[in-house]
Length: 239
Image 1 (cartoon, rainbow, N blue to C red):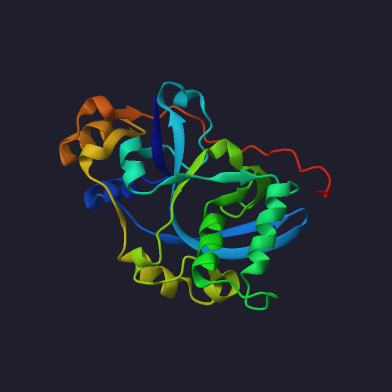
Image 2 (cartoon, rainbow, N blue to C red):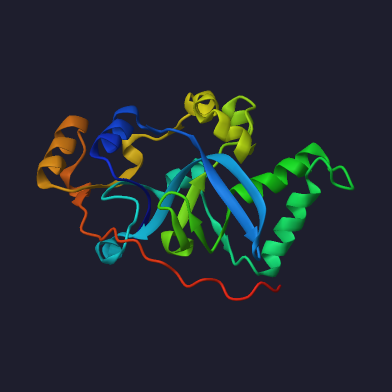
């Protein structure tokens, strides 16, 4: 049985998520490469998860922390949480997406309809290079496929018509401004949607159960490793 899990390094962050029964949206940087050239450098609003088989999770390497909240597949479907599409930077599919991204730009030869432009960007929000630079860990040649990432990315309507893609340079001038605009539109869940919780100690396990009225049977002590592992650098630049 698998679960969609949001991981964190901080116990207090886990408690805050449980207190509010929600995840806070934040713009996250995504650089998309075609071969050795940057095709897109932008930020998108999202909440990130990882699909994990629970019976095997203690044998895994989970790089984003020892605390986690696992939610049901039924909840993920209702919330429009979707698995990430991983693309090799030298693949034909990466080339196709790169061409679509070029076509939606303001200086493109043909002006696309607004709904087509938005559809292209929505696909981009759920797409990632298989191997690349991890800005969170400042690591080159990171194997993103190993994370089995799922994402919640809101529609523009969900966030009061704020953008689902912003230029990275513009965003960097005032990240707080842009994140404050979407902070009031969290991704919500109920305690009934929780399948598993992961903590580091038995004391935390008892504390969570008592404070939030959660059955001890679904609160597990995490035993996975959190070591960073590099992937092999991509070979060649041809399509």
